Image: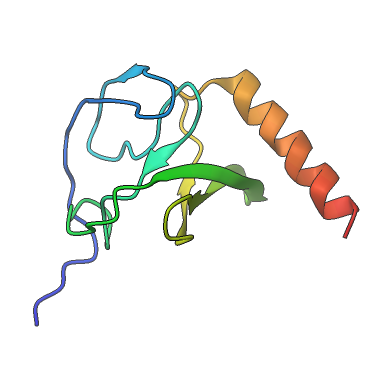
Length: 107
C-alpha cells in the first residue's frame, strides 16, 4: 500500500465554523480568523478522511520559536497539530494561549 504522508494542495475555502473566506497556499489547514479546521485528511492534503467534522482548538503550545495549534475533531475526537501562521488572527491566538495556560495551571 503506497501512503504519501504529505500532499501540497493549494485550495481556497470558506470556514464551516465562522464563514471566513480563506486563501490557501498549499500548507493552509485552518481558518485564519477562528483557527478552526475541518477533518478531511488522514495525512495532510490527502482528502481521504470521510469524517468531515469541525476541528476546534483544544490547545496552543510553544514549540521552539513557534506556536502549535492542537485541533480536536468535534465529531470523532481525532486530534492533530499545525503551526500558527503569520496570517492567523493574532488576537485569537493570544486568547487561546491564555486559555490553554489557565487550563494547564489548574491541573
